[in-house]
Image (cartoon, rainbow, N blue to C red):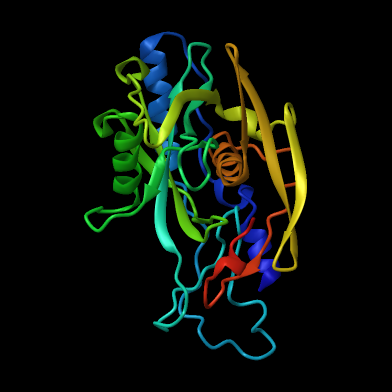
Length: 282
């Protein structure tokens, strides 16, 4: 089972049948054609399948069946019918892509408020926890983006969702890919209670070795890599790392159909039956 899951975590297995993205053309019509082609490409993406209802694995498989990946794609988190078993809360983030002046694909990012109790001051994708009225993950991601940075959902064409990630605080985070044709129509209005800054970065930087470093960490007896990307724009410097970096590595691999030259070392963990402070990564 573990070997199967590791194979599933390789994006190339799921993007090789997707038509190649059109090369960028100059002018607004060229931008529109490229994003239209990208939308068609991403609608064909199918996340790896999940295994459901694995509540009573055999004794020899009990250490391998109930698994997930912390900070990396959640390859197989079983949906349990046991009401006592821990179930991660749902959340979604928006990977909002647009074409920059130089023809590169860029992604909208935020710097979280330093007043927040979790992930304060960190770089993040706009998003948050699902609410009862949300129709789907796309609705969660676009609603949160509007609340956090004033991004009108009508400006975003949601085209795909990626496999869920499990955050260090045990949130089940679904990355939602949306395309923004008219970047000039978006005037950021960050909610000061949640966001300090809004900026954008080139998507391809997350599958390059430039300005990247990593640290090896351990959780629940498993070692994994945390990637850090240093990014400078204007006179400001940002460090994009952890879950956000992991999601963007995956998104860049799928959108640009190119694997990173560095080791992702996706960790595979058992999903805890009961969550406590001891199951939260520091």
